[in-house]
Amino acid sequence: MTTSEIKFNITLDDNKLPEKITWVAEDSDMEREVSCKAIMISVWDPATESTLKIDLWTKDMQVDEMKKFFHQTLLSMSDTLKRSISEDKMAADLKDFCEHFAEKLEILQKKP
View 1: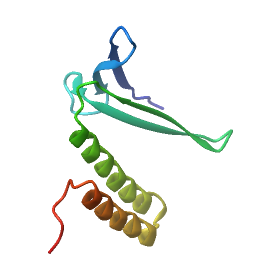
View 2: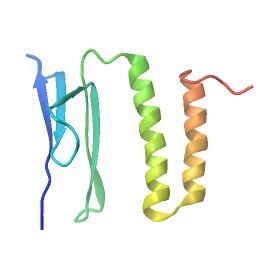
View 3: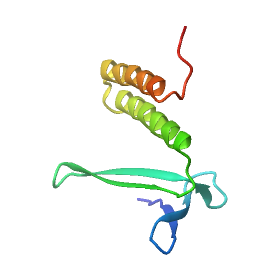
């Protein structure tokens, strides 16, 4: 059996707000730590049958960036839903919602 590590480093300011986030994954093509502005990590706790979450973003992340981050995260959740448990209909419904979400946040052009 082998293990693989994904490592996040969070630099905090004096008020313990994230100033910088970097990450690296052992089994990737990454040659060094890479900077990012936000992370959302969800893990499943089977003992309590609940999701535990870590949501962090840097002080310099712009509102428009956060809107796009949410939109793309929801889209990826739709793909995961389809791929992991073959819920094609619900994945399609979630993608439809993502289109609505993007239109309401004005991050994508409306279809004519």
